[in-house]
Image 1 (tube, one colour):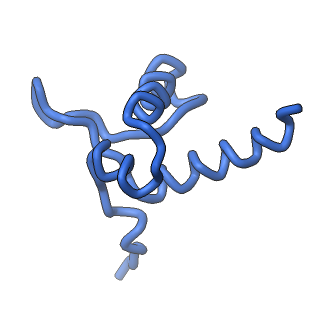
Image 2 (cartoon, one colour; image 1 turned 180 degrees about the vertical axis):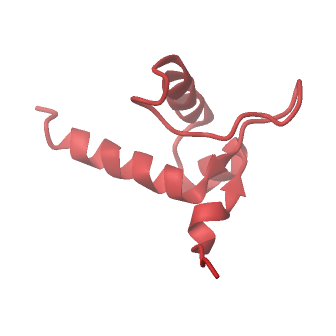
Length: 78
């Protein structure tokens, strides 16, 4: 049987990601928009809304990976 870490399947709303990280809703939403516009090359990966008018969801592991990329990018900020 295949085992998957809870972090891989746990999903959260944008509001929960904001509360967890302290990063504003606008920045998280913009990162999700970048992900969609770049077809997954940059930004924050997300799960699209299941139905019209629904909400996008974020996997905890995707949020962690995005934060790690932001940290790496900060190395090069002068």
